[in-house]
Length: 365
Image (cartoon, rainbow, N blue to C red; front, side):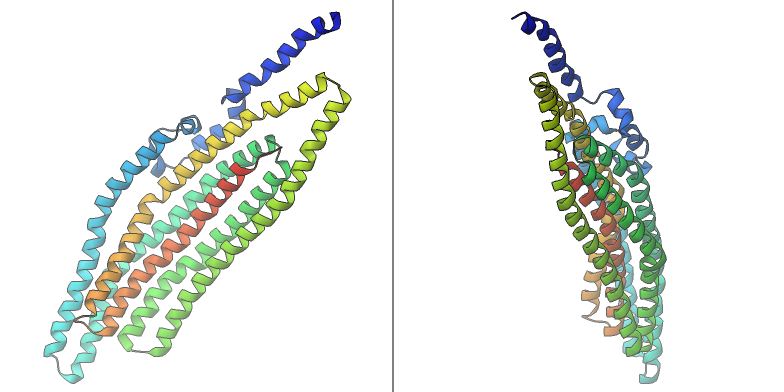
Protein backbone atom coordinates (compact mmCIF):
# COMPACT_ATOMS: atom_id res chain seq x y z
CA UNK A 1 0.00 0.00 0.00
CA UNK A 2 2.84 2.39 0.90
CA UNK A 3 4.51 1.70 -2.47
CA UNK A 4 1.24 2.48 -4.25
CA UNK A 5 0.91 5.76 -2.35
CA UNK A 6 4.45 6.74 -3.37
CA UNK A 7 3.77 5.91 -7.05
CA UNK A 8 0.50 7.85 -7.28
CA UNK A 9 2.08 11.32 -7.72
CA UNK A 10 4.43 9.94 -10.38
CA UNK A 11 1.55 8.32 -12.24
CA UNK A 12 -0.47 11.52 -12.07
CA UNK A 13 2.39 13.47 -13.66
CA UNK A 14 2.74 10.94 -16.47
CA UNK A 15 -0.94 10.99 -17.24
CA UNK A 16 -1.06 14.77 -17.18
CA UNK A 17 1.92 15.27 -19.51
CA UNK A 18 0.19 14.29 -22.76
CA UNK A 19 -2.59 16.81 -22.17
CA UNK A 20 -0.50 19.76 -23.41
CA UNK A 21 0.46 17.90 -26.58
CA UNK A 22 -3.00 17.83 -28.07
CA UNK A 23 -2.80 21.50 -29.08
CA UNK A 24 -0.50 23.34 -31.46
CA UNK A 25 1.96 24.63 -28.84
CA UNK A 26 4.77 26.96 -29.83
CA UNK A 27 7.49 24.36 -29.39
CA UNK A 28 5.91 21.88 -31.79
CA UNK A 29 5.02 24.70 -34.16
CA UNK A 30 8.67 25.65 -34.56
CA UNK A 31 10.25 22.20 -34.32
CA UNK A 32 8.20 20.70 -37.15
CA UNK A 33 8.53 23.75 -39.42
CA UNK A 34 4.91 24.95 -39.35
CA UNK A 35 6.09 28.55 -39.12
CA UNK A 36 8.02 28.07 -42.38
CA UNK A 37 4.84 26.83 -44.04
CA UNK A 38 3.08 30.03 -42.97
CA UNK A 39 5.90 32.17 -44.35
CA UNK A 40 5.99 30.33 -47.68
CA UNK A 41 2.35 31.00 -48.64
CA UNK A 42 2.51 32.89 -51.96
CA UNK A 43 1.03 36.35 -52.43
CA UNK A 44 -1.59 34.99 -54.84
CA UNK A 45 -2.94 32.67 -52.14
CA UNK A 46 -2.80 35.41 -49.49
CA UNK A 47 -4.85 37.70 -51.71
CA UNK A 48 -7.59 35.08 -51.65
CA UNK A 49 -7.28 33.60 -48.16
CA UNK A 50 -6.01 36.63 -46.26
CA UNK A 51 -3.32 36.51 -43.58
CA UNK A 52 -3.81 32.86 -42.61
CA UNK A 53 -1.59 30.19 -41.10
CA UNK A 54 -1.52 26.62 -39.92
CA UNK A 55 -3.45 27.44 -36.75
CA UNK A 56 -6.35 28.76 -38.83
CA UNK A 57 -6.59 25.35 -40.54
CA UNK A 58 -7.81 23.78 -37.28
CA UNK A 59 -11.18 25.25 -38.29
CA UNK A 60 -10.95 25.14 -42.11
CA UNK A 61 -14.55 26.24 -42.76
CA UNK A 62 -13.45 29.88 -42.94
CA UNK A 63 -10.69 29.04 -45.43
CA UNK A 64 -13.08 27.16 -47.69
CA UNK A 65 -15.59 30.01 -47.45
CA UNK A 66 -12.97 32.52 -48.61
CA UNK A 67 -11.91 30.19 -51.40
CA UNK A 68 -15.52 29.81 -52.55
CA UNK A 69 -16.07 33.58 -52.53
CA UNK A 70 -12.89 34.09 -54.54
CA UNK A 71 -14.06 31.47 -57.03
CA UNK A 72 -17.18 33.48 -57.80
CA UNK A 73 -15.26 36.76 -58.08
CA UNK A 74 -12.56 35.30 -60.35
CA UNK A 75 -15.14 33.53 -62.50
CA UNK A 76 -17.04 36.76 -63.17
CA UNK A 77 -13.85 38.61 -64.08
CA UNK A 78 -12.24 35.92 -66.22
CA UNK A 79 -15.43 34.96 -68.05
CA UNK A 80 -15.57 38.26 -69.91
CA UNK A 81 -11.93 38.10 -71.00
CA UNK A 82 -12.24 34.53 -72.29
CA UNK A 83 -15.53 35.28 -74.05
CA UNK A 84 -14.01 38.35 -75.70
CA UNK A 85 -11.19 36.24 -77.12
CA UNK A 86 -13.62 33.66 -78.50
CA UNK A 87 -15.80 36.40 -80.06
CA UNK A 88 -12.74 37.94 -81.75
CA UNK A 89 -11.90 34.60 -83.33
CA UNK A 90 -15.47 34.14 -84.52
CA UNK A 91 -15.41 37.65 -86.00
CA UNK A 92 -12.20 36.83 -87.88
CA UNK A 93 -13.74 33.59 -89.15
CA UNK A 94 -16.91 35.43 -90.29
CA UNK A 95 -14.88 38.16 -92.03
CA UNK A 96 -12.69 35.64 -93.85
CA UNK A 97 -15.76 33.63 -94.83
CA UNK A 98 -17.35 36.75 -96.33
CA UNK A 99 -14.18 37.64 -98.21
CA UNK A 100 -13.92 34.09 -99.53
CA UNK A 101 -17.46 34.31 -100.90
CA UNK A 102 -16.46 37.23 -103.15
CA UNK A 103 -12.95 36.01 -103.95
CA UNK A 104 -11.94 34.24 -107.11
CA UNK A 105 -10.83 30.64 -107.10
CA UNK A 106 -7.19 31.72 -107.37
CA UNK A 107 -7.29 34.28 -104.57
CA UNK A 108 -9.44 32.21 -102.22
CA UNK A 109 -6.41 30.28 -101.01
CA UNK A 110 -4.62 33.49 -100.09
CA UNK A 111 -7.67 34.68 -98.20
CA UNK A 112 -7.63 31.43 -96.22
CA UNK A 113 -3.94 31.89 -95.40
CA UNK A 114 -4.64 35.44 -94.25
CA UNK A 115 -7.46 34.15 -92.04
CA UNK A 116 -5.22 31.54 -90.39
CA UNK A 117 -2.57 34.17 -89.73
CA UNK A 118 -5.20 36.52 -88.30
CA UNK A 119 -6.46 33.79 -85.95
CA UNK A 120 -2.90 33.07 -84.87
CA UNK A 121 -2.27 36.78 -84.30
CA UNK A 122 -5.34 37.14 -82.09
CA UNK A 123 -4.74 33.92 -80.17
CA UNK A 124 -0.97 33.89 -79.82
CA UNK A 125 -0.74 36.81 -77.38
CA UNK A 126 -3.44 35.33 -75.16
CA UNK A 127 -1.93 31.86 -75.33
CA UNK A 128 1.58 33.16 -74.62
CA UNK A 129 0.41 35.06 -71.54
CA UNK A 130 -1.34 32.04 -70.04
CA UNK A 131 1.43 29.60 -70.91
CA UNK A 132 3.74 31.88 -68.92
CA UNK A 133 1.17 31.99 -66.13
CA UNK A 134 1.08 28.19 -66.10
CA UNK A 135 4.88 28.12 -65.74
CA UNK A 136 4.72 30.65 -62.90
CA UNK A 137 2.02 28.61 -61.15
CA UNK A 138 4.16 25.48 -61.31
CA UNK A 139 7.09 27.45 -59.86
CA UNK A 140 4.92 28.75 -56.99
CA UNK A 141 3.73 25.22 -56.24
CA UNK A 142 7.33 24.07 -56.21
CA UNK A 143 8.44 26.79 -53.79
CA UNK A 144 5.50 26.15 -51.46
CA UNK A 145 6.22 22.40 -51.49
CA UNK A 146 9.75 23.07 -50.16
CA UNK A 147 8.19 24.14 -46.85
CA UNK A 148 5.03 21.99 -46.89
CA UNK A 149 6.52 18.56 -47.59
CA UNK A 150 9.29 18.63 -44.93
CA UNK A 151 6.73 19.69 -42.30
CA UNK A 152 4.37 16.87 -43.27
CA UNK A 153 7.25 14.39 -43.29
CA UNK A 154 8.46 15.51 -39.85
CA UNK A 155 5.02 15.27 -38.25
CA UNK A 156 4.38 11.89 -39.88
CA UNK A 157 7.72 10.62 -38.55
CA UNK A 158 6.86 11.91 -35.07
CA UNK A 159 3.58 10.02 -35.30
CA UNK A 160 5.36 6.71 -35.77
CA UNK A 161 5.73 6.57 -39.57
CA UNK A 162 9.42 7.43 -39.81
CA UNK A 163 10.29 5.09 -42.69
CA UNK A 164 7.10 5.87 -44.60
CA UNK A 165 7.50 9.61 -44.15
CA UNK A 166 11.08 9.54 -45.43
CA UNK A 167 10.21 7.40 -48.44
CA UNK A 168 7.18 9.50 -49.41
CA UNK A 169 9.05 12.78 -48.98
CA UNK A 170 11.93 11.50 -51.12
CA UNK A 171 9.53 10.22 -53.80
CA UNK A 172 7.56 13.46 -53.98
CA UNK A 173 10.68 15.64 -54.06
CA UNK A 174 12.24 13.50 -56.79
CA UNK A 175 9.18 13.37 -59.02
CA UNK A 176 8.36 17.05 -58.46
CA UNK A 177 11.86 18.00 -59.58
CA UNK A 178 11.63 15.71 -62.60
CA UNK A 179 8.21 16.99 -63.62
CA UNK A 180 9.05 20.66 -63.11
CA UNK A 181 12.25 20.30 -65.13
CA UNK A 182 10.31 18.45 -67.81
CA UNK A 183 7.63 21.16 -67.87
CA UNK A 184 10.10 24.02 -68.16
CA UNK A 185 12.37 22.45 -70.74
CA UNK A 186 9.92 20.51 -72.88
CA UNK A 187 6.18 20.45 -72.15
CA UNK A 188 5.42 24.18 -72.03
CA UNK A 189 7.76 25.05 -74.94
CA UNK A 190 5.95 22.34 -76.92
CA UNK A 191 2.71 24.27 -76.35
CA UNK A 192 4.21 27.15 -78.36
CA UNK A 193 5.43 24.69 -80.97
CA UNK A 194 1.98 23.11 -81.21
CA UNK A 195 0.35 26.49 -81.88
CA UNK A 196 2.93 27.43 -84.53
CA UNK A 197 2.85 24.06 -86.31
CA UNK A 198 -0.94 23.91 -86.31
CA UNK A 199 -1.14 27.45 -87.73
CA UNK A 200 1.26 26.52 -90.53
CA UNK A 201 -0.67 23.31 -91.19
CA UNK A 202 -4.00 25.14 -91.49
CA UNK A 203 -2.55 27.92 -93.65
CA UNK A 204 -0.68 25.65 -96.05
CA UNK A 205 -2.99 22.66 -95.96
CA UNK A 206 0.00 20.41 -95.31
CA UNK A 207 -0.89 16.96 -93.96
CA UNK A 208 2.68 16.37 -92.75
CA UNK A 209 2.49 19.44 -90.52
CA UNK A 210 -0.90 18.28 -89.28
CA UNK A 211 0.66 14.95 -88.33
CA UNK A 212 3.48 16.77 -86.54
CA UNK A 213 0.93 18.73 -84.50
CA UNK A 214 -0.81 15.51 -83.48
CA UNK A 215 2.57 14.01 -82.54
CA UNK A 216 3.42 17.00 -80.31
CA UNK A 217 0.09 16.76 -78.51
CA UNK A 218 0.46 13.00 -78.08
CA UNK A 219 4.00 13.38 -76.72
CA UNK A 220 2.95 15.96 -74.12
CA UNK A 221 0.05 13.80 -72.97
CA UNK A 222 2.23 10.69 -72.84
CA UNK A 223 5.02 12.28 -70.81
CA UNK A 224 2.59 13.78 -68.30
CA UNK A 225 0.77 10.49 -67.92
CA UNK A 226 3.98 8.48 -67.53
CA UNK A 227 5.36 10.74 -64.79
CA UNK A 228 2.07 10.81 -62.86
CA UNK A 229 1.59 7.04 -63.17
CA UNK A 230 5.16 6.31 -62.08
CA UNK A 231 4.79 8.67 -59.11
CA UNK A 232 1.51 7.12 -57.97
CA UNK A 233 2.78 3.56 -58.33
CA UNK A 234 6.06 4.30 -56.55
CA UNK A 235 4.29 6.10 -53.71
CA UNK A 236 1.84 3.23 -53.28
CA UNK A 237 4.54 0.55 -53.25
CA UNK A 238 6.87 2.43 -50.92
CA UNK A 239 3.94 3.22 -48.62
CA UNK A 240 2.96 -0.45 -48.41
CA UNK A 241 6.49 -1.63 -47.62
CA UNK A 242 7.50 1.13 -45.20
CA UNK A 243 4.07 1.11 -43.55
CA UNK A 244 4.54 -2.51 -42.53
CA UNK A 245 8.02 -1.69 -41.23
CA UNK A 246 6.68 1.24 -39.19
CA UNK A 247 3.99 -0.94 -37.61
CA UNK A 248 6.56 -3.57 -36.57
CA UNK A 249 8.97 -0.95 -35.20
CA UNK A 250 6.23 0.82 -33.23
CA UNK A 251 4.94 -2.39 -31.68
CA UNK A 252 8.46 -3.55 -30.83
CA UNK A 253 9.22 -0.27 -29.08
CA UNK A 254 6.03 -0.42 -27.01
CA UNK A 255 6.69 -4.05 -26.06
CA UNK A 256 10.27 -3.28 -25.01
CA UNK A 257 9.17 -0.39 -22.79
CA UNK A 258 6.39 -2.40 -21.19
CA UNK A 259 8.66 -5.37 -20.54
CA UNK A 260 11.57 -3.35 -19.16
CA UNK A 261 9.38 -1.34 -16.79
CA UNK A 262 6.46 -3.42 -15.50
CA UNK A 263 3.33 -1.42 -14.59
CA UNK A 264 5.00 1.96 -14.98
CA UNK A 265 6.42 0.90 -18.36
CA UNK A 266 2.93 0.22 -19.68
CA UNK A 267 1.80 3.67 -18.62
CA UNK A 268 4.83 5.28 -20.25
CA UNK A 269 4.15 3.36 -23.44
CA UNK A 270 0.54 4.58 -23.51
CA UNK A 271 1.65 8.10 -22.67
CA UNK A 272 4.11 8.04 -25.57
CA UNK A 273 1.27 7.07 -27.87
CA UNK A 274 -0.77 9.99 -26.59
CA UNK A 275 2.13 12.43 -26.89
CA UNK A 276 2.22 11.96 -30.66
CA UNK A 277 -1.39 13.19 -30.86
CA UNK A 278 -0.02 16.73 -30.97
CA UNK A 279 2.09 15.85 -34.00
CA UNK A 280 -0.91 14.18 -35.61
CA UNK A 281 -3.06 17.26 -35.02
CA UNK A 282 -0.37 19.48 -36.48
CA UNK A 283 -0.02 17.17 -39.49
CA UNK A 284 -3.76 17.38 -40.17
CA UNK A 285 -3.74 21.17 -39.83
CA UNK A 286 -0.74 21.54 -42.15
CA UNK A 287 -2.35 19.15 -44.64
CA UNK A 288 -5.63 21.09 -44.62
CA UNK A 289 -3.85 24.42 -45.04
CA UNK A 290 -1.67 22.99 -47.81
CA UNK A 291 -4.68 21.72 -49.73
CA UNK A 292 -6.45 25.08 -49.53
CA UNK A 293 -3.32 27.08 -50.43
CA UNK A 294 -2.67 24.87 -53.47
CA UNK A 295 -6.25 25.45 -54.58
CA UNK A 296 -5.82 29.21 -54.08
CA UNK A 297 -2.56 29.23 -56.08
CA UNK A 298 -4.19 27.36 -58.94
CA UNK A 299 -7.58 29.08 -58.84
CA UNK A 300 -6.98 31.94 -61.30
CA UNK A 301 -4.89 30.05 -63.89
CA UNK A 302 -7.18 27.01 -63.77
CA UNK A 303 -10.31 29.09 -64.32
CA UNK A 304 -8.71 31.17 -67.08
CA UNK A 305 -7.33 28.16 -68.93
CA UNK A 306 -10.49 26.08 -68.52
CA UNK A 307 -12.76 28.91 -69.71
CA UNK A 308 -10.59 29.55 -72.75
CA UNK A 309 -10.47 25.86 -73.56
CA UNK A 310 -14.27 25.52 -73.41
CA UNK A 311 -15.12 28.80 -75.16
CA UNK A 312 -12.56 28.36 -77.93
CA UNK A 313 -13.86 24.85 -78.58
CA UNK A 314 -17.41 26.25 -78.68
CA UNK A 315 -16.25 28.99 -81.06
CA UNK A 316 -14.67 26.35 -83.30
CA UNK A 317 -17.92 24.40 -83.38
CA UNK A 318 -19.83 27.54 -84.43
CA UNK A 319 -17.18 28.46 -86.99
CA UNK A 320 -17.58 25.07 -88.65
CA UNK A 321 -21.11 26.16 -89.62
CA UNK A 322 -19.95 28.95 -91.95
CA UNK A 323 -16.15 29.08 -92.18
CA UNK A 324 -13.47 27.02 -93.91
CA UNK A 325 -12.79 23.76 -92.08
CA UNK A 326 -9.06 24.51 -91.74
CA UNK A 327 -9.77 27.87 -90.13
CA UNK A 328 -12.40 26.45 -87.77
CA UNK A 329 -10.08 23.56 -86.89
CA UNK A 330 -7.32 26.03 -86.06
CA UNK A 331 -9.60 27.83 -83.59
CA UNK A 332 -10.32 24.49 -81.91
CA UNK A 333 -6.61 23.67 -81.77
CA UNK A 334 -5.91 26.99 -80.09
CA UNK A 335 -8.33 25.87 -77.39
CA UNK A 336 -6.42 22.58 -77.26
CA UNK A 337 -3.24 24.49 -76.40
CA UNK A 338 -4.96 25.96 -73.34
CA UNK A 339 -6.12 22.46 -72.43
CA UNK A 340 -2.54 21.20 -72.71
CA UNK A 341 -1.20 23.87 -70.36
CA UNK A 342 -4.08 23.19 -67.97
CA UNK A 343 -3.20 19.49 -67.95
CA UNK A 344 0.48 20.09 -67.21
CA UNK A 345 -0.27 22.56 -64.40
CA UNK A 346 -3.01 20.32 -63.00
CA UNK A 347 -0.65 17.34 -62.93
CA UNK A 348 1.78 19.28 -60.75
CA UNK A 349 -1.01 20.28 -58.35
CA UNK A 350 -2.35 16.70 -58.31
CA UNK A 351 1.09 15.41 -57.35
CA UNK A 352 1.11 17.66 -54.30
CA UNK A 353 -2.46 16.70 -53.37
CA UNK A 354 -1.59 13.00 -53.52
CA UNK A 355 1.43 13.66 -51.31
CA UNK A 356 -0.67 15.55 -48.75
CA UNK A 357 -3.28 12.80 -48.59
CA UNK A 358 -0.59 10.15 -48.29
CA UNK A 359 1.20 12.02 -45.49
CA UNK A 360 -1.97 12.80 -43.52
CA UNK A 361 -3.06 9.16 -43.70
CA UNK A 362 0.33 7.98 -42.42
CA UNK A 363 -0.53 6.97 -38.88
CA UNK A 364 1.66 5.06 -36.50
CA UNK A 365 0.37 2.19 -34.37
